[in-house]
Image 1: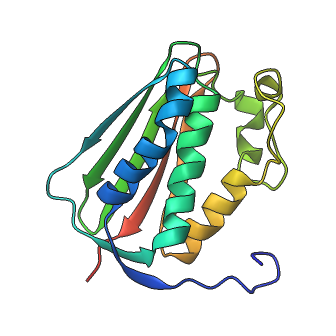
Image 2: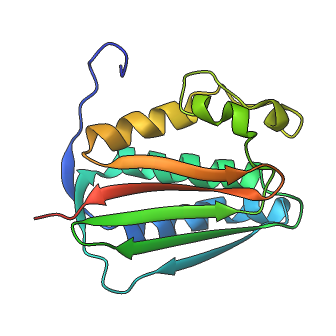
Length: 163
């Protein structure tokens, strides 16, 4: 649907804090099995956004799932939500394998998976980050990351504050 232009959003008021808390509950067993601790640090004054609830939940799920999958054994995942001037910033930092610098430019392309990630997990299609990027862009936000191989990654997205 994304490639064909039949991608629609059903926007409504929603809370990134609530969506994140729900996702953390849903991923708790996976995190525990992976010996990965999830911490969550939202700013208390984060207002709601206007977004497609299901699609933003999908983005959060993709980012949490990846952070847990690619974290080092007994690693940690930290999620933060903060208010900036005219937008909300959602970020997840892991203590994982990181993304090789030469491959970082491909990370949001369809079917791309970094070479070092293939040794940790064979499941996946390589469309998660592409999908997340397209949802965030269609929602009026931005998405990006910083990563250092063998040290971890921080993936983030921003969404405009609901007016």
